[in-house]
Image 1 (cartoon, rainbow, N blue to C red):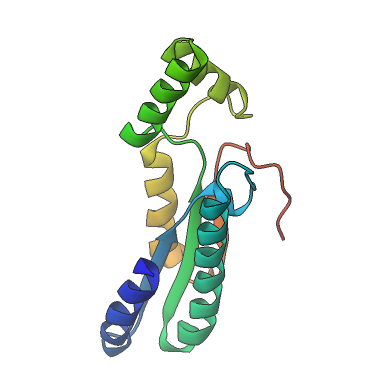
Image 2: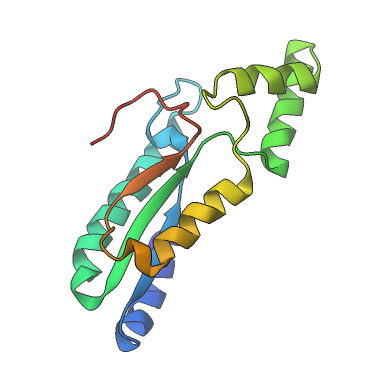
Length: 147
């Protein structure tokens, strides 16, 4: 609901100022179902669907709405999850991290700047015809083909 509440508050101000950009950031669980965490997939899928619906509603007002799905990104939260996984599996964090990186075709973790760079692009005039899209920044790790 946070995405909806935020948009509800921001959109009237964006309309009054002639337009703007809304970038929702979700998660790859929307694209990759997990039997151990189905709730995350449901909520992330709903957020992506909401982003598309909102983009249709506000495009004529000059507001572009897009969604970013980050892959495994080197954040404090993610590194904490790696450490938990290492404890559970009786391995090292380094070994667990190497396993995660091994699943990413570009051969490295996604960095926060990778996400920020896409957000900055989507907010720029260079992306003036891009709205209603959900874009993964996952280093190629996603297994689906999305049109």
